[in-house]
Each structure stands twice: as C-alpha cells, then as structure tokens.
Image 1 (cartoon, rainbow, N blue to C red):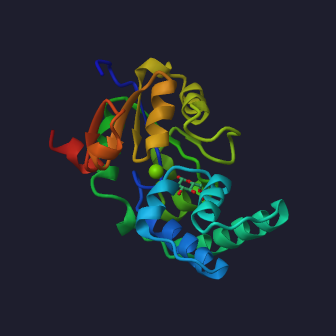
Image 2: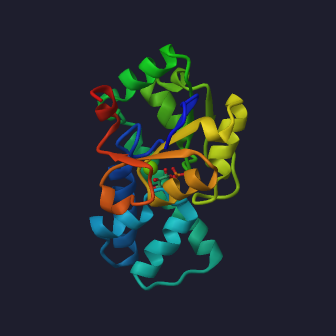
Length: 212
Ligand code: BG6
Ligand code: MG
C-alpha cells in the first residue's frame, strides 16, 4: 500500500466505538427468545453484516425458518433492544486513540468520513458527540448494497471528493476489507491478522497509529 492518504474512511462499529458487545447482547437475547443459544464465536460471523443478513445467519445457526413478516418483526425486536442498550453509550466507549488520531490527521488536511452498515450511525455519533469529526457520514440508511459491496466506501469518497485510490479504509470486518479493496482503496484491518488476511496492514487498534 504505497499511497498518500488524502482521506480516511472509518467503519463505525468495532473501529470507532465498542458497540459490538451491544449487538451481541441483543442478538443473544433474540436467540434465547427463539429457543437456542448464540455464542460469542457465532457472533464473529455477524460483524460488518447488515441487520437483515445477520438475522438470516442467526436463524441458520438456530436451524429455524421464519416467513418474511416474522423476520421483519424479529429484526425490529432486536433493533429495539440494541437501541435501548446504546442509549447508555458513553464517550469512554470510544476506542483508544480514535479521537486523537482523527484530530491529528485532520490537522494535516486529511478528509475523514464514516462508512458503516449501521442504520443507527446517526444516533451513535450524536450520543458520543463526534459527528463534527467527519466531513461525511455514509451509513446503512444511504446505501442499498451491503459490504462486501464497495458502494458505502465509494459513496463516502464521492461525498468528500477524493478519488478512491487516495482513500484508506479502517475496518474490523472481513466483509469491510473486501469492500475497501473492491473500491480500489487501501485497507487497514483492525483486529487479528489471522481473520483479516486480505488487508494491506493489520493493527490492534487505532491507538497504534499514534505511536508508529
Ligand atoms: C455493522 C455491525 O456495523 O452494522 C453489524 O458490524 C450490524 O453487527 C450492522 O448488524 C447493521 O447495524 P444496524 O445498527 O443497522 O442494525
Ligand atoms: Mg465494524
């Protein structure tokens, strides 16, 4: 990855803020309501995946089948629980180094954007008071094709008027890394190298970029 970063596009859940645990709690509660267990290991399969697709995976794990109307009802139920949990979201759940790093690159003239699958992105940014740190926010309310489709990142790049080749995406999900690469962008994985093998580089968290 040899490129001058003119824009940094951040995934939200698991990169900017530690919301993965709340998604997990809500999906686990739904699994219980449907009569089966859902482990943290199962939850790995839902990272970066849209709400509807996550429900499909959950049902596959529990070997259940529902009709379309029931799926809508259960997806809404999960979201109500999730929204209830994130009402309590606190700024100390912003992941280490995130605000310092974003401030640092913005001072250097790098544009910043969010590229997330979550339809709850506006609520989360508002609760954390960090909306103004991003020139553009593209989320699940604005795109029709979920990651690994590159739509979310391409739209973010278009909104901030930076060519894809000058954008670097920060992502914790495999589907997001694939989306970034398909968009022609650099891809920095956040997490364990073993699960993000396609990424150009993998770090444990944004905080590491402050000490490099
Ligand atoms: C992604 C999360 O960012 O957003 C997934 O990693 C989640 O776990 C997806 O399912 C959709 O989020 P929401 O808030 O629209 O249900
Ligand atoms: Mg994520």
